[in-house]
Length: 119
Image 1 (cartoon, rainbow, N blue to C red):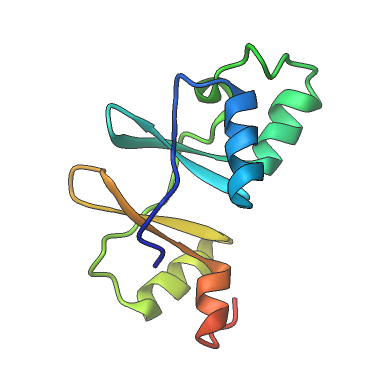
Image 2 (cartoon, rainbow, N blue to C red):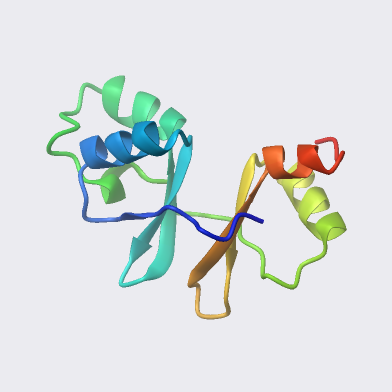
């Protein structure tokens, strides 16, 4: 997993999320509120839920368009369990959380590809 996860606060604007994603060259940001995971925002969310719907990304908050139902795993999950979960749910990324929903990492399909796992 990637341990140094770049996140965005739910109260930030979509523009701020886009800027962060472009600056860090990432396609997804875990969304946090009070330090805990509350959603996920991807470029796809931004295109479909903001740009296509003609929302002003300078005013629209991340929490308005984020994906709220996020599948997660714990840091002690096995690679096999993670691969199965991601494959079964057609996921490209999986936040890793502690029991209180604090984000401690993220596993992506790219991370798994490095080790030779096929999604």
